[in-house]
Amino acid sequence: MSALDTTLIVLAVLALLGVIFEEALHINKAKITLFFGTLSWIILFSASGSDAETNAIAAGLSESIAEIAGLWLFLVAAMTFVAYLNKKGMIENLVYLIMPGQVSERKLLFLTGLFCFLFSSLADNITATLVSCSLILSLDLPRKKQLQFATLVVFAVNSGGVSLITGDVTTLMIFLADKVEILTLLTLAMPAAVTVFLLAVFLSRGLEGTVTLKTNKSDIRPVDATISALFLITILGTIAGNAVLGIPPVLTFLFGLSVMFLVSRFMSDDSDLDPILEYIRIIEFETLLFFLGILLLVGMLKEIHALNSLVAIYDLLPPLYANYLMGIFSAVIDNVPLTAALLKSGITMTPGEWMGLTYAVGVGGSLLIIGSAAGIVAMSKIPGLTFGAYMRYLAHLLAAYTLGYAGVFMLGQFIH
Image: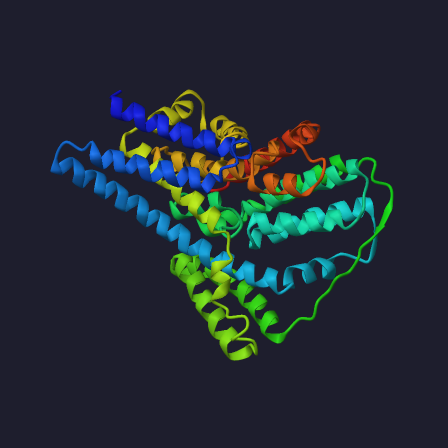
């Protein structure tokens, strides 16, 4: 291995450590990954020894940028929809519409798991977790019971996202790499939903009381109801358009976004006070910059052929076991760089085995509170939800993850 390769790998490791120890360093992971991602490519170009080598590096960078652009544009469109609906109180209204005014704690746990599972399929995990944590905090439950609810929220949010490209960025990445068809991914919802239910059964011990929900509904304007319906139609149109006509999801979502702008323009009466384009500015750009930095780093590692070692586990173990372990690794290593590295490493698997990986990296992060964005958000919102407190439920979480993965494996036997 050359000194250049060693230097670049060290930069990638430093970036990964920066992500893992973000809370201790007090430096946002987006800033860390973007710094090391761009620096590594600059070093690559600077160390080039010939025009041919420079052209090859430029071609590799262009390939990475093209992949990033498709991912970015899709996420911008989806996150703008969610930012608008969240600001207008539509998501909060949906929660109070589903939840009864008075309910037993046990039933509420199951309803919370169901809401998190369904909502995180349509929206981003962070929004789903924030809404669910607000609900938990409004109940004035004892600390132990809050932790039971929060644990289910983290697992349910991550489980709900794996079956739809709008729900989890790793699912989107695997789909965009043409590893699994969009309708095939939908079948992941079955084993994922069953395991959320099973975890709720595990966690429902000791929940014997009754709670009263404090309703906080806001008025729904016709324009907001229309945009809510448009968001759902866009998701369904994206799935149907890709399955039947092969239309790229990014194109359908950008079209839906453009219709959203026009609907707001002609139906809204507050175009001057609350312009619709402002919602693009309030989406989670830190998340988008994090993806940019990570994908630049992984593209660089592919360029210097450093991803071959990651494939070694697939040389030692069949994909069934290797994918299961990758899910456990994703609880320590962020699932976005892990998935990006696996996609670029050239691993060959069947669609059923790619489905197993999709479930593993999407849900495996739930095993540790620091293993997913949902866990980090929940830890910041729920008092007492620490790394150690969450670890008390590790056996339950591991059992649910393993049963879910087994279900996906059996499902994969019918997919060719």
